[in-house]
Image (cartoon, rainbow, N blue to C red; front, side, top):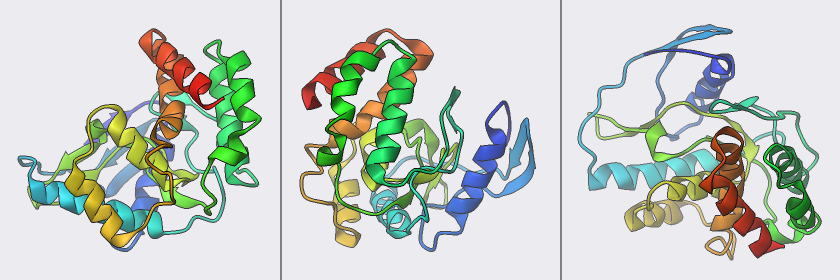
Length: 226
């Protein structure tokens, strides 16, 4: 598989970081990485099955058990949207800074300022984990080998709930996937109430890129949690 564009160098580093996690989701091997070109091995795909969905939960739990040294860091891109990849001192600093950055680019800085002021009280008290960072269903390939392969990462040190919430943003996450995940790794109390909170940043990315209904949805979540 070949890909060109501004963030492929970061993507190559993300694939290599994900590949090093024992038990994590498989990813294509990086064959060639240049600033504007990424070539990876091909993934043979098959029909999506219940076994794929169970394996996705298990593999994500293994990935999220892997600690990361800093909050933030990693990729400077989420899809086609540039983001600040500087490390942050804590989770609230990472989330709050990205919230300010993205909301200011789509005209939502004023309502977002109220949420930034209380974000520390809303986020779970956990350390940073390695997360995929752009985990919508289009970035999951159902391998012919029965495994769910991940592509196009925006890795960083973040909250595991980010990946799970983004999966649910563009299609329901099967119960069997969540159950398989929770069999291996517990989530902090209140995670279901935080789903929309963790969907906010990807919605803001889409608002920056496309505007329209994504901006309205993001504004609704900001006001809900403020």
